[in-house]
Length: 375
Image (cartoon, rainbow, N blue to C red; front, side, top):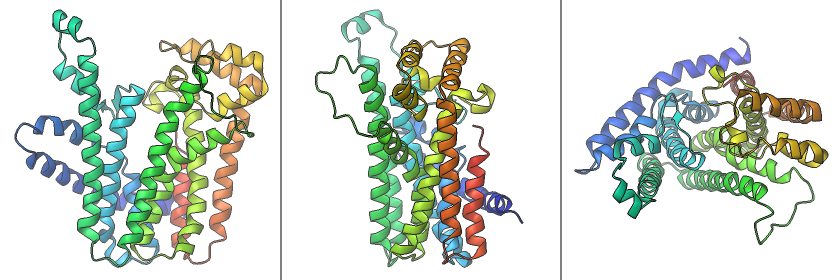
């Protein structure tokens, strides 16, 4: 069986069980909510369902490849914790990015605004930021509830596991790195967009792409690819050396995945992507595409900045941005870099000798699963 099929079979086998457990968790969270809080908690539980469950499946897979096949559901609490963490991060991320849809549903802050919106002109004139403050406050608090609930699930399920301290340290590192990436994802575009108006400038790195690579690694690789898999391995007793080898593979895969996401954000069909193509342009997102133009073609950068930051960019604007990236070589540069990291991930995986053939096929199949992504 081809590696892709090995991973897909694992995904199809384990997804339904995890999805059912997420549903049970969501119902319990609502049932246990204090009087007056159920409505607010429903904004979290609505988002905390319908996802691809890839992080949860990766956690189970990490446990499985370290010979935990006889009791794979032991890792399910770890898997659910990661899915709850993912939902929490998404609530904050959507708030920061002003996203309106997620997983085919309204984002939490959008739903809160619609259900609590004050239309009284007098109130709004006296307190113009009242809805913004209210929506932001509830959304941030809901994210915190999810983050700490996820952590508590780990403590409750694995307090007798001999690897619990290593597990928690790795989990904390993943969370910190992800939050750092989230901060960079806000600060870096803002700093680029308003660089002439900011009184204190950050030191310019010698490598013009180092910030973008750090951003992509922190923002995506630590909690999308590397974190879940190695957490499952640690739960099963993997050594630090084994974790290190697999981490290198999955960091490469995660970096490639983020570059791929950046490309899709400009070049995908809207129906395939499931969100507005061009949103990254409107939000002034900093990617290898933008960085390449900035480093190599000042005239093209001036042209590009006519579209970047335009909240109402249309399909013609997106096509103009595509043309700039194609003409300057930015698309080729980013695409080649994506292919390089996918290839290096596979090469590093091939040199790992402590995994059996099935374990390698599962990881390789996951990488191939990412490569064929169109949304």
